[in-house]
Length: 185
Image (cartoon, rainbow, N blue to C red; front, side):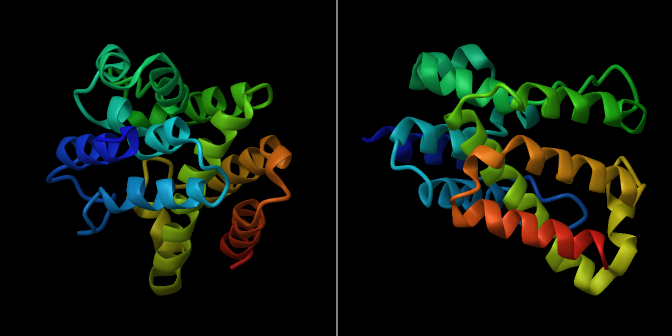
């Protein structure tokens, strides 16, 4: 079986029973959307595998070592690079800015492949925020650890600034457009 199919199967199994924050939408929809976005930018099967696996280390009991054993060093590196340290020993609302800064700063020197995965993840996220904000308005922010819309705006715009290397791709343009829509509502 091909590496991408194996990655999809693992992601489906590891995210089984999980839902998107504040919704009943099965969580697996997000990594599948992320890999679909990434496929519009690259055909590299390892990058696509990493895109569909991008949350398994962060949100499940899967380790970087397990990803390395199953999919190789490059996929494990890409997934780990996109994985946020949840700092679970502290309340998430208190560590939000630290965790998001730790996401943005390395992007400035990240590889093209790392940036593809980040764009795919964040575009999927901002699409969901946009869709839900049409119904909920600013109440959308209540579902997150960080309730301040301006902090989310800082984060999503900082991501855009760090991903300008991808500006020739439709996904980047869409990302910037939706960020503008969400934060000027």
